[in-house]
Image 1: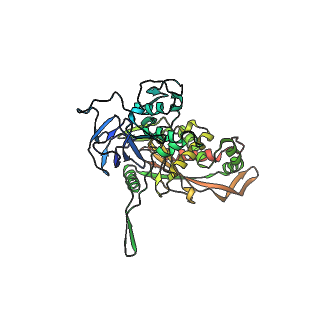
Image 2: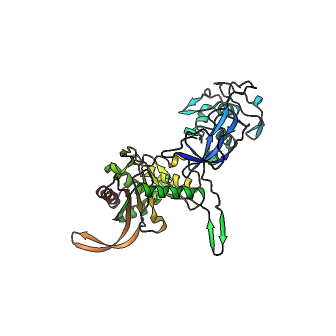
Image 3: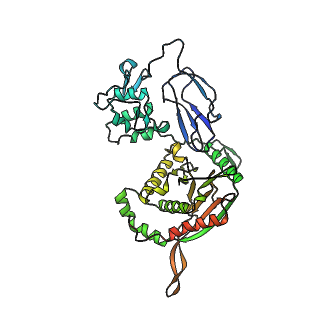
Length: 431
């Protein structure tokens, strides 16, 4: 059982794609597993014959535990020099036999590009993938551009066959295969039982995971929540002024979320002891600022994709990341790496018209911030002529933090700094 991310210590076996006696190729998916909120394929690390499965579907298995036995050298057969395309593998709509698609190590493809190699652009290519590439006249440069859904971005057999099937179509290379191969959150209808005027609905797998995670978080961390109110009139006016130009220049719709992420990233640089986690009696200070953004799924469940190194991205880069992750979350196309490595979480409760919230910490992080709805309110302004009342765009920010390591002064100062960055937003800022 592979380790799929930070703090993930077990996974549930959803489906065995192969049964004992089946031949498996290197990098060919053998089973589907479910970790915390994301379902993934597990590719075979070797080529051979699946001899035995050690766990059944729906079993929960700890990481690094053997889950199957694959025999790589059968006693009654000569082992092949290298895996080749299995008999009757459909390639480009045709049925190709093994003899028609031989594997020749480091051969030059008919496309005339440089030889296909096992290692290129930081990725490993299995003999099977190279065999298919050579048979379809795919050179190394083109192979390097194919999106991979395997571990560490490897191109699997499924990836290259999907690419071949869409090759030459109007769809840009990789788009079709990406959508077909990206692991998705499997939505299963929960069982429901009606008794009189009461309907009893069984939690689906994701809801059970969320429930367990929330209870664990409350049990682990003593939660404290602080609030500030921020005048974001300049920010709102700036976005209203530039949003059309921004879309024309970058091809992205700018929402308030990337602006909030930018302010949080700046404040985390100012207060690095909020960007931490606890390990026993040790405080782990994270150098990377990876901000998770809570996103609602079509099923009603919640998932937290992560913007990696958010402090190194400008507003255009943050906008692209936010929109991409939100879109793929709604389409159930997030990959395991998309929800891993978060050091701080942001949840926008204002999306649902809520003015404030008291979110639960996303363990093992130390804090989570909620942004409320932006509303027009009368506010007192200090001017050189005295105080006046004006209509302003106001919002509440709330921060829940782990009181074991974040005290009120640190938590409150950090939250106030985020509010200050939003209030001091330059209304004349360019894009």
